[in-house]
Length: 307
Picture 1 (cartoon, helix red, strand yellow):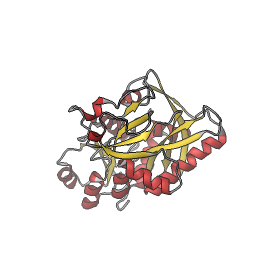
Picture 2 (tube, rainbow, N blue to C red; picture 1 turned 90 degrees about the vertical axis):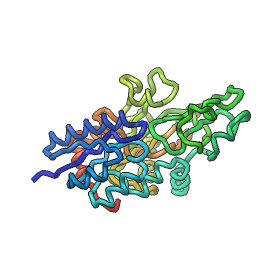
Picture 3 (tube, rainbow, N blue to C red; picture 1 turned 120 degrees about the vertical axis):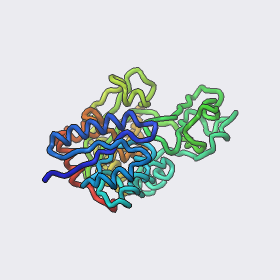
Picture 4 (cartoon, one colour; picture 1 turned 135 degrees about the horizontal axis):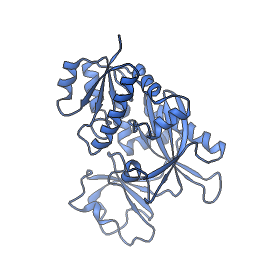
């Protein structure tokens, strides 16, 4: 008898639209692959819905807070429903960019220097020499990311404005020049390295990630074999150090302006990467010889509690 898979999607974060795309794509592909699928829009009543549904596996296609930060993982552990992707601790750790950097750095993964601050302390003086980046500590999909250029006379006013809705603690990080590289991990195997080239966007922001034609994916990335392998090694190292399970994706900057052996800097790890057929990690899986359906089926069969 085929497994009953509850695909968790939508949710309550600012990344709800992306999660619905991921979830529906996964549900469609899993149905084609022979699983019995129920689509669950994960609201505040998700524990009640799942305890009545009693699926064999929960496929987590949620993005952002609640779905990606250990909360839904804790609910699934409590309900004893095997689930995909990372567990409670690693999800919470990866979602907190500052703490994840500390762990990655301790494991030998190069990171950019950064400091945690209250957004209200960034007023008339730059918190570090520009260029730098201000990031919310616990948001995904580049929400709230502000790049401060070298010639900017004062810090960006948006961070202290009443319109800011990404929390009062922010991370101020040295801006790293260079190319945007990303590498997925499946189980304990690093997948291919993709270069993401924003099309008409200053950087790989929300629109570049999700608008049609917002970015171009170059897979395999056109970089030297030793840099390619180094990125794969670092992605796997970060995945293991943070304790991720199933699938993750690490994002990097590679500054090759002055030499081919330029600076590589790890930016963050994503424990719930996009899951449409044209998303980065499914593309990497196809490049490694797994169809989209086979890739999702592997995740379902890999699901467990105590991740």
